[in-house]
Image (cartoon, rainbow, N blue to C red; front, side, top):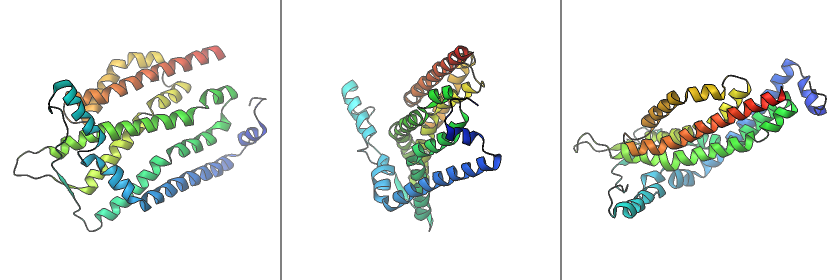
Length: 276
């Protein structure tokens, strides 16, 4: 253990296995409490969460739809790519459907809002085990992890979600079949798509830690670039409507994140070489 490590971190390093478990238990308790707190607030302010946020992509006035209409007028002087016709309605088909959806949304909202605090708790638990140099380079984990997560949430909500809602909400196999979508299905699509994008945008953070423990190298990531790009295109095709424009819009940020991951892995490798 380094001699210049602070006394409290030396004490942490000297803790027994059971004491580490006890510390972990309190980190988990505080993390869960933060999710419950934010979830309770989301449950109370349901009008804002549902009408103002989650159900907003159903309205033609949603910013993404208005942007495509503006872009259509600027580029083509018509409404060829204007997304304004949302021809479906939301229904609830189960007695407890809206209540269970309310609970699910409250928990998911609590998890999203508490995410920076969860990262901070993870950092507090891991930090004492790191060497001073490692702590120095990982000090920004909470900030960058929170920033990337927020960026992914925004991308999922304003890009992937409205494209998916517009396509699947208007898709019909026959004019005789009306689209009446269960509210639980609609909300689940919005939440999982948005939250999933937030997690995917953590890719550079994941690559950083994999590079730190030696599981990936920049050479490996470069050699796997073609395969990774194909995987990204497949993922984009799955989570977006089956049109080329939507797939390209979703794929570009994922390509950039992968390239950032290669740069991060290369930087980690250089730091390791300098320390040796």
